[in-house]
Image 1: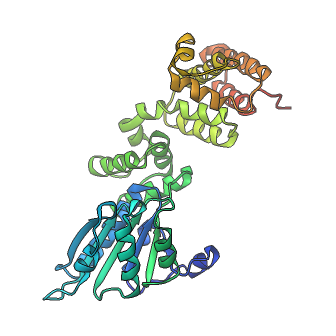
Image 2 (image 1 turned 90 degrees about the vertical axis):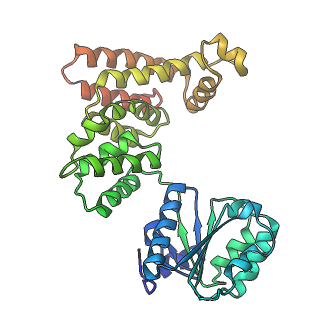
Length: 347
């Protein structure tokens, strides 16, 4: 975490029309007002913890108070921020600002006009329009704040950077292939990815390698065959090939990968052309309602001819990975290309 006098991202702020520094979760630093925004709760929690630890390292007498903005009553913030007899530094953390009561918004805007000395006010806002006037005031520079942006990590490279930071903070070495394998195994849940990193830090000796990850989480990596299928069906050819490589590099067998494609495409074929919805339609197809809804979303951009060709390609790939061809990996890559093109001619 940067010290109090750390550099700001003035350029980034200028580009977004925001007058205050906008920092990453691990760059959090003290300020009279710290706005922690964004949907990624784990990163917001980490940023808040780093800030608390830093303030406590400066003065162990730090007084920490917590408020819930949605249940707030008029005057609570100003009472907590008022000077104490012994002048201890204060950290006031306010959660759920995106659901703030009117009373909180009135008091918070008033507080910005004259912040309390030796007090750090942390506002956690998870997104939405509630409290926009307050956010705009903070971002305009009223109160002398900083913003910690905790947006959802969507790209694999962002998640790999997060995992690498976990190992780096613990003083542990990790191989890049191990990072890719971890992200392949826990791509859908950042909290689970963090927990996996911490388990490896606690239990695994020496450098964290791909073999170590496979030993701990190999089975989990294999379940992500559906991640390969999902990316290809959505038309994201590059993402699907990366996910396929991650799965294969982590020890996944080609046969269940083809099976994952088969489950998805056959469900799409069942749903294609069927009108209506609800439990009755789903039951007639032998599916759950959510499976029908998901298949209909997956069918966007597909034609009946494309589905026919995809099913034929699945049959060929299934035979290939079971010994009909010498190179099962090439057969998988060919299948990914056909599916990502939604069954259209790649030529």
